[in-house]
Length: 343
Image 1 (spheres, rainbow, N blue to C red):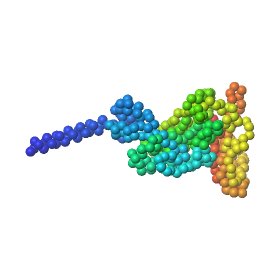
Image 2 (image 1 turned 180 degrees about the vertical axis):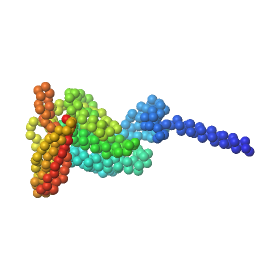
Image 3 (image 1 turned 135 degrees about the horizontal axis):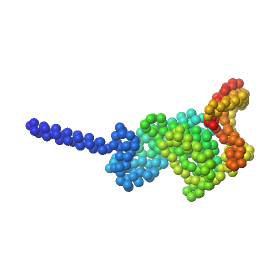
Image 4 (image 1 turned 180 degrees about the horizontal axis):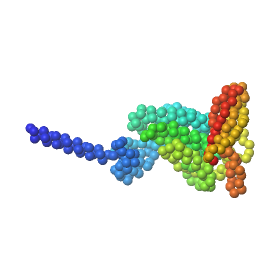
């Protein structure tokens, strides 16, 4: 009897040890390991065919490793597109017209809340079978420069200015991805990097853009989304061959447009006075007073533009947006505004 008990205990211990060893090998399932360790372990277990299958927009499940299918390709530029019904916010160009980064962040947070809620409703995506419709990655926001209306997709953008696009795009990325120190709420994918403003011929066109224009005009919004927003993904571009210095953005346009960049309607009128400039190391502080001289309370978007001296050897922009602040001022009242920029 004792011998049988001993054998039974030995078998149980052996099975437990075997199970423990098996679990130990599954590093990619163990949250105690780092993300790098888990990914490396998973890749070491996959065949070449399985690895390639995960590079597709519609990745099928890998049954033997219990990896669920995942269908990339969803959009959430101003609300989740699919599957089902979601809150629809104004198009991106309309959101940009608010000049309100904080509200932009709140909108993006609401979008990611709804995405996660639908994902959970669909049992972590198991009941979501439509292509391009899973809910953990979105091809948004669009931070291309909308400097030519002939592109046809200008409503998807935040306009023609790289500074404004970078500020708003970064807030959108943060709102989608959340602020958890370990887990992403949603993966945000700023697009299309870069020089993407040609739609009808987007797969074949050959961009003719100088290195300087790339770095000063097309790159900054993407850079800010990555550096400050920590965007976990980037979509590459379909390209164009237009030269922005030929008057296709306010930075170079010398004519008088009907509605200039930064123009906004208001129910009130505002007066600017007492501007001062102070230098403190690498920071320049610009302060001024804004008074509501109209008959109604209202919002005003104060905008700071910098104009650089012209040099013969390079073509500098006429002016560039470097800061802005949206404020509410009651009629008859004055607010002091301070905007800081780096040299």
